[in-house]
Image 1 (tube, rainbow, N blue to C red):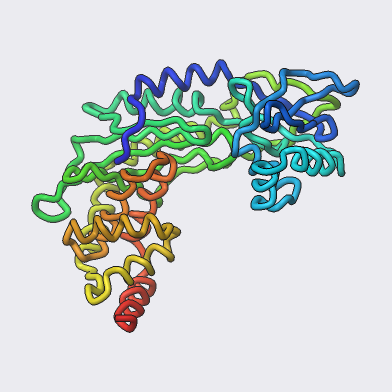
Image 2: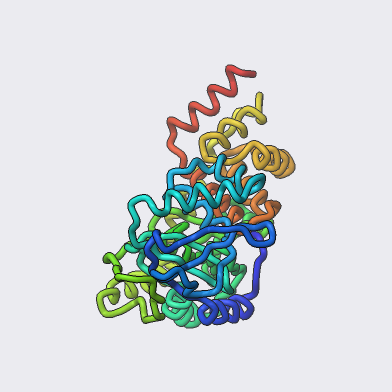
Length: 360
């Protein structure tokens, strides 16, 4: 499992960010992009053209969301951002004024980090931490194996060493839970079981039996630019969701659920890969699961080094390679893909093996 922050550092950063954030509801006709010191900035103006806040630097996620909203192809948008910011600003400003409507601008530390619909439901990292960490603290001997906060995601990964079993003799795994959230519209609140493999410190995220909550709520509207003041986003109407999240955290380390997952791991151990063309098998599996060509090469290397040429071995090669990638967010996605490989359909597994066999 890729290492990020300690839970202490993550908690401090969550608290810091909660104080450093501000959200604005803005009519797109009152947004203006321009160039400052060779980089694009975003201005939030009132009806007379006066800045309501200091001009904002723009993070990549907000750029991507503006590109999608304005129907400017990302490849062209990025080329303008790199080669001609004036042209980018001209394009953006022109289309912002076509059919103006309310949008939510999420900011942090003086930077625009998200450009979202006015239906976006704010469920922030501090909200999720407040309802999940007390449950984890009630688990005897729980270990925070890895936590991280990036521009787009929060991850908290916890292992319960009291729930331990062997997939095969000597291959020990433990139950755990992954709590994740995105404040920038990149993903829902999500609570999922985690399998932690001791032999190589691999983490495998179980993308079944999970609780999700999308960030979609009622339309927020205003007649002019305004700051959306901080509020308790998990109110009485979210009590059912809060209880479900807390129940899912507890259930993720439930013995019965752990046993069911363990059975799937053992079954995958008996599904043998076609060793006549291992590179072909890995390439086909990678293509089917959204693993890049560069990542596929690393997966193949770890598969060969692990000498376990089963579906279980392939999944562990993916989760082992997740520790090598630079991005913590991408590493966490590869941990999910590892379990998707474990549970791939028999038809897909047969297709991959047969195709590789014919190619060999």
